[in-house]
Length: 120
Image: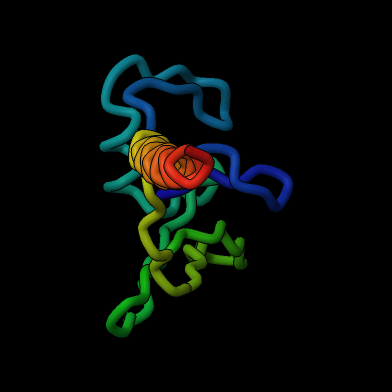
């Protein structure tokens, strides 16, 4: 159940204690009371949730995209998108740069050594 106030989602979980619209305080079992009495729940702004996740294909993921408040229920909204390619970690990037620098230094040493040999 989700609590709706002024057409917007106010709470997404039922608390164990709470205050009813009539001013009475429920110190324990508020969540069970709302789950067992749908009329009382609706009077206190709690609506049932419709949760239908879409099917996904290979290489796709489902992402939660908010709530749509309707007259008698709240519908969870989802979107699907491609799973992003894994990005190299910072350490992997730095490791690659170190290898490139080492290769460049080795290449320069070879060239310098060749230049020195030619000058003699």
